[in-house]
Image (cartoon, rainbow, N blue to C red; front, side, top):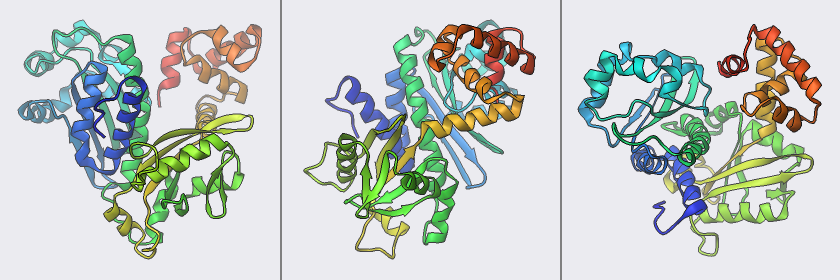
Length: 378
């Protein structure tokens, strides 16, 4: 996707689609990273992950001098505040100033001998992509040394793109350089928390992982009708089928290849669905026994309520919160205060005050800012 001729929301959607394209074809990352950097006001983007389980090491910094990039390896044991970046959950955006003060950073040998000569600003936008045992990854958008800091709108865009980058890298870790020759190998995708489906041009599933099967069985938002994907929301269903057809090169379908759609559900948050094309040679390798039914798209389905519940359970196990306290804690980390959190949960200020007091006691925190930092730590 080039993004040429687009503007506003369409341009952002095109960039999001390119992120998922790169998850399936790593050669696309440099161009996508440059587009992200330009969009968020930090043209020098460093993107990398190390995944020993899959034997994958990926580092991209397309606008950085290769000699400077190689020097990072020599400095890695002494990079200031590097261990602190692990305190931030994947998808959470933070800046250099959140882990080390500007004055402290600019006084280090690392800054004066490598960072400043490289022309980097002292306060990049950063998000972790994942942290899973020995595997880890992050993306950082660096402005130039004398460049003004990103505008609030650019920070918001980086935060939105960060969520897609986390999902795209999760997909890439499963698919990238993975030889899929039979159904037994495909069952490795059952470890994904998101629903993962391979579908043909008529939206007929050729492979469904465990999470997707559970969503289809619930028939709430997404289901099977006559062997093809169907939806509870008629408009959403038409959009979904159009996105799938676009991946097959159907000229009557919507412009582009793949995209996103929210599928409405009754009394529940919508399902978030991302449709990404599958290259023909990849599809043949994935399902060689169904030559007459070629996979044209990956359909990745996220249930926000499942993700919220997983976070609630994590907080309950870590701190002994009650379900109500854990739900309130998740609202508090949004940072807009106790009243706003109470309003979203439909509880009184008095109940919110009681929850917060109990949460302080169980975590040993004394201030709300301290509590938020603690809750966001893994």
